[in-house]
Amino acid sequence: MRKAVFLAVALLPQTASAQDIARSAQALELSATAPANCVVRAVRATGASNASFQSSGATGGQVTITRLVDADTAEPRATSIDITIPATCNASHRVSARSGQGGLQRLGATGAQGTGFSEFLPYSIQVGWAGNQLAQASNQGPLAIVVPNSATGELALRIATAAGGTPLVAGQYEDSIVIQLQPAD
Image (cartoon, rainbow, N blue to C red; front, side, top):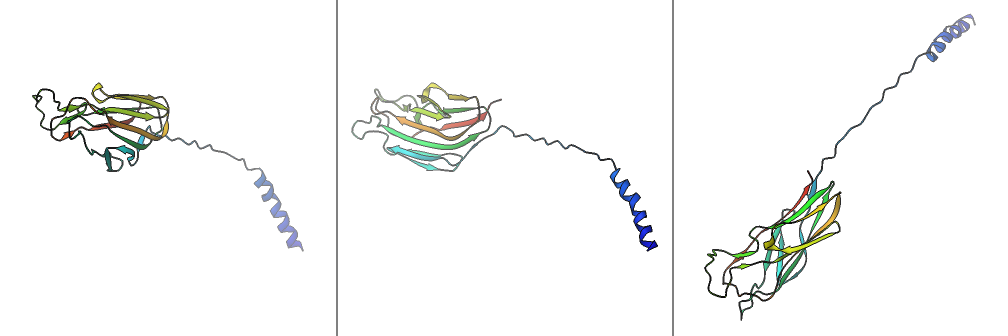
C-alpha cells in the first residue's frame, strides 16, 4: 500500500503544474483579390428575318443575309437578326459595339458606281445590357454603354437593314461588328 500512496503523491505536483501553463494565441489573417473581369459564353441567335446565324462559340459567329436586294428593283430588303451573348462582368465596365466599315460594303468597291446605285449599305445596331438600351446607325461610330457596377445576364444585340432606298450594285457585301465588354480602368 505504501507504494500506491507514493505514486499518488508523485502525480499531484504534475497535475498542478499542468494547470499553471500559460496559454498563447495567434491570429491568422486571410487576404485575397478578385481581379476585375468580363467573361462571355457561346453566342446564339434568338430570332431572324431574312438572315441566318452560325455560331463559332464565345468568339463570335457569322451572320448571312438570305436576300440582300429585291430581285426586281435591286433595292435593299428588310433584314433583322437578334443575337444574345451570355456574359458576366464582376466590376464596373463598358460595353461597346462598332462596325469595321460603317456598314455593308461591296467587295472591290471603287466608289465609281453607276448613277443611282450604291456600293454601301448602313444598318442599325441595337445593344441591350444591364437595363440599358442604345441604338444607332452603323455609320455613326462606336456605340457604348457604361455600367457603374457588376452585371450578369444576356447581352442583346439586334442588327437590321431597312427595306427600300438606293439600289445596290451587284456583288458580295461584307462588314464586321466587334462587341467588347471591358472592365473600367
